[in-house]
Length: 624
Image 1 (cartoon, helix red, strand yellow):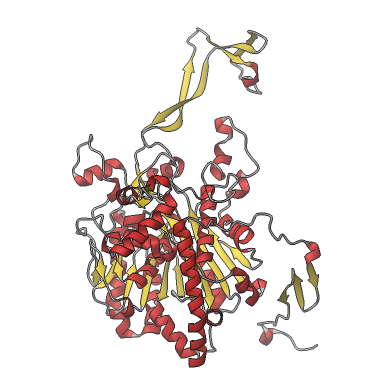
Image 2 (spheres, rainbow, N blue to C red; image 1 turned 135 degrees about the horizontal axis):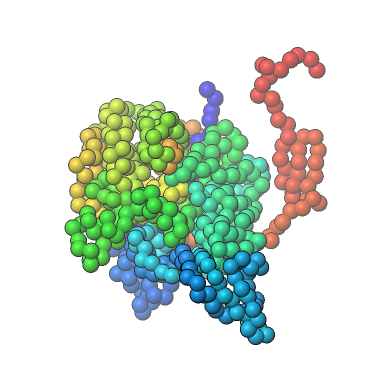
C-alpha cells in the first residue's frame, strides 16, 4: 500500500454552554475545580469576554455569576419563559340559538367569510359579525413547560450581535462564530494557506441534524400563517440543514472546494468528519473544515422530544431525588449519564475542527493537536423502534478500537487511551452503551478503560454532540484532567461496569502517556458512528518517522511563529477585541473571472487542473 496522507488536527473552535472551544477554554470550564489558580482566572476572563458587563465587577470576572450562568441550567428568558410558554389553545364555540356578536376592523376580516357569519357595517372602519352555530377559534394562552433545563450558551453571549447577522437563524449565527474561531485558532494567515492549496482542494462539511427550526428559519416559515404573519423570503433557504457549510463557504472562507452535510441524527458531526478524513486520505483535499451547529432550545423542538419521552422533565427529576411537587428540581444535575436517570437534556452548540494533510501541516509549521484517522458508520439493521438502540454500534466500536490497535499497538491500546461515551442520560442509553463499551473493552483485553461523558456538563446538542466530545478530548490531551460525571451520585445497578472505569470526580492523567481516544455517537434511526483519534504525542512521533530530521527542525522553527499568532488570537478574544470573520459581498467572482482550457480552469487567478485519469483502465476497451 502506498503512502497515505494523515489527517492532522491543526485548529478547532466553537461555542457551547461551557464557552469558547479554542484555547481549550470550554474544556477548562468543565474541569474548573481541578485547574490551577492561573488557569481558573484565564478561563473566567475568557467567559467574561463572552458574557458582557454583568459578568464583571470592578473590571474583574464575577466567578460565581459566571459559574452559575454557564453549562446546563434552568432555561433562561432569552430562549423562552418555561413558566409561561405561549401557545394557541383550540377554543370551540356554540351559539345555542343566540348569535355570538362582536365588532371587528374591516381590514382584519378574513378573505373568505365563513358560511355561518353574518357581516353588517358598523362604521366606516368596522363591521359587526354575528355567528350562528359552531365556530372554532384558537385562543392565545400560556402553559407551564414540563422541561425546564437545557444546555445554553453563556448568559449574555449573542453571536448575532458580533457581526451584521441580518436576522440569521441562531444556528447560523453560531456557525459563523465557530468557523471564525476555528480559523483564528490555526495561527496561520488564511491567505497564506490558500496560496499553498488549489481551490478545489479545500472541503467544508458541516450541517445541522434538524435544520434551522427557530423563528428566523424553517420554524418561522411553518408557523407564520398560523400566527397571522407574513412568510419572508429568508425563512425557507436559511432553514436548510446544510446551510452551516454554505455560510462558512460564502462568508468566512470563500471556499470553492467540495462541500455538503452528511446527516446522521445525533451522530452527524462524525458523519461529516468521515467525509473530511476520506478527502484527505484519498488526496481529494488538503484542507478540510468539519463541523455542525444546532440551536434546538425552542419550545416547539423540545415539545417533540418530550412527546417521545426522551427529555428529563422536572417531574421525573423530582421523583429521582425524592422531592415533593412543590420543590424545584436541581436543573444543574438534569443530565445524569450512566446513573439513575429519566431522559436527556437538550443543548445548543456549534463546533468546527480544521484538518490539514500531514505534508501541508509540516510545510506551514501548523500546531498539531492530534490526528483524526478513522470514522466507522453502521446502521442497526431491522428495528422494532426507530428511536431505540440496536446492534450497529457494536460494529462501529469494534472497528474503531481495532483501528487504534493497528496504530498504537496492543500494550498502548490497553493502557494509554480513553473512550468518550455518547452518554445521553437516558435509561436505554445507560444500559445499551455500557454493554457495548464493556464488551468492546473485554474483547481487546482492556481493563479499567476510562469512560468520560461530557453531556453531564453540556447537555445533548443533537448533531453537534460529537464535536463537543472532540473539543473535550483535545482539552484532556492538553491539560491532563478527565472530567468526572459530577452530576451523579453513583452508577446505576443495571450499568455494565466490567472492564470500564467510571468516576463522578475529576481524575488526573499524564497527557504525555495518552495515545488515543475513541469517540462514540448514537443517533435516532440507527445511525451509529465511532471515531478513532490519535493524541499529539503519537501524531508527532509518526510525523518524525515520516519526515527527516532537517524537515522536522524546519517545522519546529516555523511552529514558533504559529504558536505566537495562536496566543495573540487568544489574547485578543479574551480582551474582546476580535469579532467573527464575516465577509458579506466580499471578493464575489463572476463569469469574467473564469478562463477555460482543455487541461485547466482558472478562477480568479487560481487554477484547477483537469488532467483526470480514468480509474477504470482495466475495464476500458482497446483502441485510440
